[in-house]
Length: 338
Image (tube, rainbow, N blue to C red):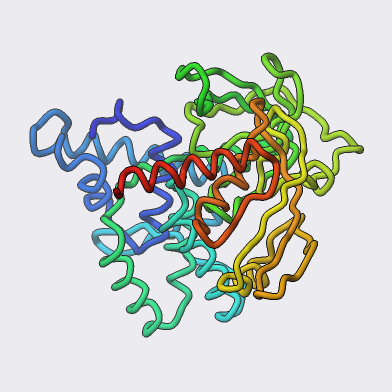
């Protein structure tokens, strides 16, 4: 990959990850970034090393790192020492959470991946060996360049700077639309492990909206700053949300479901929000009510996912439109398997 293929920011973040992993010589760094170009003689080794020396100098001058250590060997190595204040139990707990997102979240974030690798280095050797074997068997080797959207989101929220990104809304026109957003809050969905941004969208909606990280691209921080309104309450905003979506262009409705006795234990273990029991039945089944937001067609999309996941173990009592969707699903399955 040539210098033009790496933006400076991408190269700096990738360089940071390599130096945090282990000490490396300048020649090793050049081979890591420009092996193909050096082999094809489209860039000289000396030129590649000169680019990387400028990057190292920039990192030190801008104090973006806590110190790049250069060894005194004849062929010096460069390394960023690891510093942390967590004990090993805390590191293991945080690593477990970060690894969950790194392996299973739909948004493949460079930030999550870097956290996993950094935390892993502070764990005992016998745990590291198991984790590395697990990673080798379950996930393919990843490139240095992963999505940095989550980092831009975090920076925008921390610095209270507006962020611009392109967004592809499902069920819409099928075209990417530019949005400028002041971020009020970020949440993670327990159903799909994706990150969601809640903030004021300036322009098309001109209102508080929710955006899914995996549907964003081309994120860029703007110089314009903003203030989070004192009356914004994320708990209130999400009070009618089954997960993260909330009203999603519709309104909140009450939904009545009846679950069979076989799955009651899953309801009790699930910690489902906005759910209350209406009636216990003699056969062990249970009727519950939940409140959830709908889309502009009046469909509670997040509850629909739940109903489909339980299949014949749940009956939709109301609303009628959700019941009809569920019945149509059942009829279509019967038609196909007949």
